[in-house]
Length: 353
Image (cartoon, rainbow, N blue to C red; front, side, top):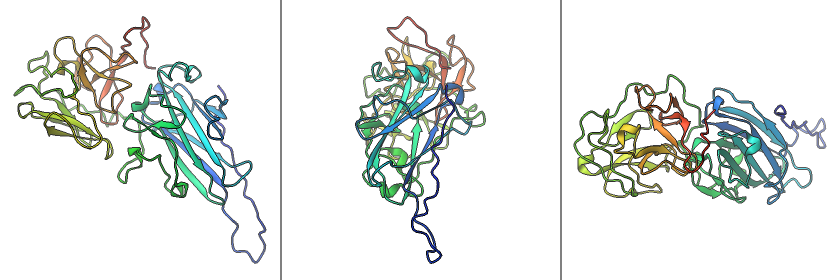
């Protein structure tokens, strides 16, 4: 694998003289790539760039295996080769379940994260474009004109107001990552992993599963019952199942969730019964966070996600993975995933490395 390359831009002295106080700023775009996955889960990253519509099959401009514990992958500074106001597109691909070389449109980027951006240069203006390679976007391919947002949904990849990218950076419209209170993603750390929470011992009743997912078991082995809901600070609260409360993910804010009464959640989120380990689900139901699930919103479901769904667990809770291996922290909300990935309809057991 080639080492990461940064395209450096030399200062351009455009008609500078002793009478000129300062020169014009550079026309450039800086991509700042980060991830909320641990470095041992990152299996290479590539960046391709070019004119809009020409990046899907373009050879990568750079490839790297760099990853820091803070979640930083690196930066790439690009400049126009012709017009200083021309449009440009980028495609960033990261391997997770497979090496990045196996991440292709033909296989739907299964086991990979793909991000796209499209914007125009602004003459003599340095622009910053953060690109977050998120757990929520594993196996979410979108198409060449869209990209995966922080809620796991496809939104337009086009940034119309490129001037807004000056300074702190800009995000595609509809991506919660660009919210006023949103913070850059970072992998979970040992200190951040929850070790003081466990499924409630006493359950007052079942909470309905609004999207057709089975109800949580009131007397499941090792606990279960009322659905647990993550808080913004990384803890857990127990929703009141007897009052019909469910855990609703709210991606208007920075990965928030709340216990709400009723059959459906409001805002832009989907309502699902939240679970944190297999003991929260009855019978053979699987508590899974799959490639089609919203970030941090694991649900009790009849079978595991056929597209590489992972069994969800609570780091520090003994036996929450059963025989599926150790519980590894994997979510910004503090949840973990069992080391073994369950792939339905595929004889190969893919391990998350």
